[in-house]
Length: 231
Image (cartoon, rainbow, N blue to C red; front, side, top):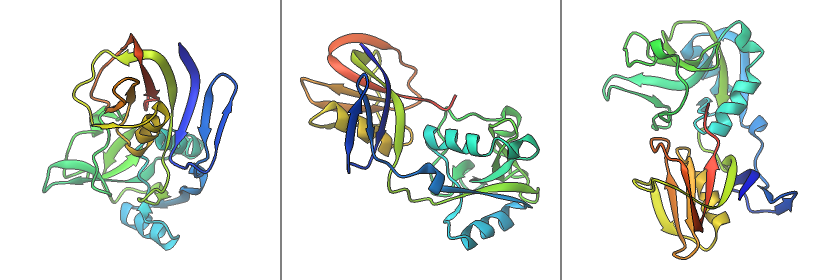
């Protein structure tokens, strides 16, 4: 049985069950977590402006839900220009990383020709088409500001009862929990989570990442939360 729509968040202040097993826990507002600067600035100027507004800096929309919100919020602006994000190329480790030190998820959408690690293009932005790309830091773009420590994380997806991913290893993490709901909530804590599998007999919760190309197979002892991806 597939339940049509689930939103799982970290806050446990209230729990509402309505419709056909649709679940929502109260959450922080994505609208209050990001701000758009409608001024053409270079990367350094944009970062300073975000900090002057009280944010940690440029935004890190690292989860599918945050990225979807930023896409929607910047849709009008992106008709003419892209927006800076807290994404940089670090030559000392030859990696493109968010400012919190984490790597973009491998299933994030990229403008292919500019996804390569290149010291000539060390600053990241969301492209007009709604994908990520690297560019010279001196370019002029709008910007998305955000805080890097997020108290609550929201996860959108579907619950599949009596189904399990047909591949369960390797997992990002594995631990014992008391319920499927608790397992699903853990998915929202990890921006790389794409599946949260709960086994009703062993009470083991497995968190699976985007690298795992898995489909679902029938398993009467399992319930699986499938998170919506970036695409």
